[in-house]
Amino acid sequence: MADGLPSGGGLGLGAMAPERTNWAAEEEPEPLEKGLFQDEESCSDCSYHDKPVTTDCKASEVREFTAEFLEKVLEPSGWRAVWHTNVFEVLVEVTDVDFAALKAVVKLAEPYVCDSEVNTFTLDCVKELLELKECRLPLQELWVVFDGSGVFDQTALAIEHVRFFYQNIWRSWDEEEEDEYDYFVRCVEPRLRLYYDILEDRVPSGLVVDYRNLLSQCEESYRKFLNLRSSLSNCNSDSEQENISMVEGLKLYSEIEQLKQKLKLIENPLLRYVFGYQKNSNIQAKGIRPNGQKVTHVVSSTMMTGLLRALLRDKLCEEHCEGEIEVQFHRDPLSAINACFEGDTVIVCPGHYVVDGTFSIADSIELEGYGLPDDIVIEKRGKGDTFVDCTGADIKISNIKFVQHDAVEGILIIHRGKTTLENCVLQCETTGVTVRTSAEFLMKNSDLYGAKGAGIEIYPGSKCILSDNGIHHCKEGILIKDFLDEHYDIPKISMVNNVIHNNEGYGVVLVKPTIFSELQDNAHDGIEENKALKIQTSEEADAAERVDLEELIQCATGRMELYERTDLSEQVEGNCEIVNELVAVSTQKGHMKKKRLSELGITQADDNLMSQEMFVAIVGNQFKWNGKGSFGTFLF
Image 1 (cartoon, rainbow, N blue to C red):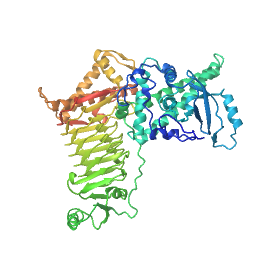
Image 2 (cartoon, helix red, strand yellow; image 1 turned 90 degrees about the vertical axis):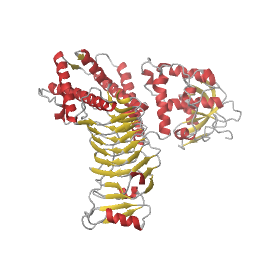
Image 3 (cartoon, rainbow, N blue to C red; image 1 turned 45 degrees about the vertical axis):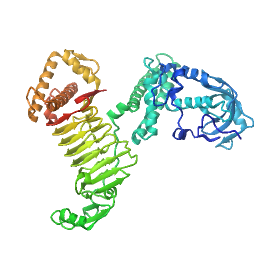
Image 4 (cartoon, helix red, strand yellow; image 1 turned 30 degrees about the horizontal axis):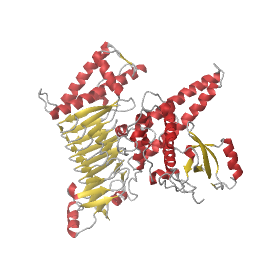
């Protein structure tokens, strides 16, 4: 087949075996919105980075829009294409196009050319298959063949747009979505942005796997739902089978809606950042070395005699060590950490170290720099998911500067256990430090900056103590995740004498559901019922809640010795505002817990916030020059 090369402006595909999965990475089509969802007059002078002028399109109108687009640019007949399936590729000739059905009427091209993975797939088999399909094939299964004249280049490109759209953007359930919104704005834009973020390694690999698994689960559940709905239409009314099927259908519908919401969270770049990716670290601790010996690992690219003498004097002499110790030398800190067992110490000598891997610390070890942080720099290059991953019971890191580049995830993640960071510098790329549920993080005398997300993310059920640190030049300073849900524990937060400044958004942000904000408004207005949460309240309960809140604020205020001056400075106001908001949310959580216990027949529930082991110490912090102020809330 001399002319058997796909057309369309250099698609980068083979003659008879087009690689659909790798095509997008080799050469991307023009952005989809320029073809399917854009006014014709605006197509010629709009680049990918310019926001296109779009025509409103509802989900139910997508097929019609696509057909209209193809009618304008597709040659109705006379072109050849490769009919590509998972089993074979066959050369066909297009004689007509059914635009409304997005199908082409074809016949086998002469001479007959076929490439099949099954030896028994003959010409007669192809003819029989075509007859079953009435010679009508989906445009997505056709790759236009290059003919040299350029006449069919636009046809090839248009089909690529359609193929890309239905493979990467369209979901089988989209047509049943409500038509009250613009499909392009609600679905196409976030999914297209996610597609390119994944393509350019801007999304954590674990989150990509989660997204694809959710997508597969949702597709499978939706297929089951359609089959069940079809079977119900054929059942006799009021039959027992119909009642059972109705219950199954409701369960499937609920499952599909939950999966769809999870997909939307990942597709939305803001919510993807706010809720984060709850990666489960699979790092296994080694435990104590078999011989019971603890080892000191010394890291230095070169070892001069003066440096060795200083190490012997300051770190390796008998005064600092119990008896004889084993010392191992390494040229880079990553190899030293990988060689550690429980109780080991890693001493990093002055130098600039470049690493490509992840620091996975699963045992209780000490990682300390021998000198000032600016003299001990560990720089991570390469697009890895994490820089420092901590799961050990008691990890100590000190006197080191960490520099992150081309990152997908944050610079430090504490999954569980306790991690202490003292006298360190964190130059971030994405988020800074993430403190997961049940983890404990202590940060002292350190400097964190440059995060494109939050400098520190605090998850429910965690413990975070921040003392005498600088957190600056980030998207947000500190982000406290929503802990109102009944499954979440209240975090323990202590912030003392930190300077949080020059962040793009707020110094501190609290994430909470919109429904909670409505609940607060309703309580303030004296509304007795909040339908969303189905919590019954009375005037007495409202009054009690207000009294409890005042007592708790006084308790927390007295415990932290906050200033009582009327002319509070911006810094002190910020401390009070954060305390009051956290106490208010925690109080609401306590009332929700009390109601649940009452429903179970437990009449006594403790309203004392401090008895719930929540200790909030927020005092002496300075909030300066943050773009949106010292404290704010994000409602979802």
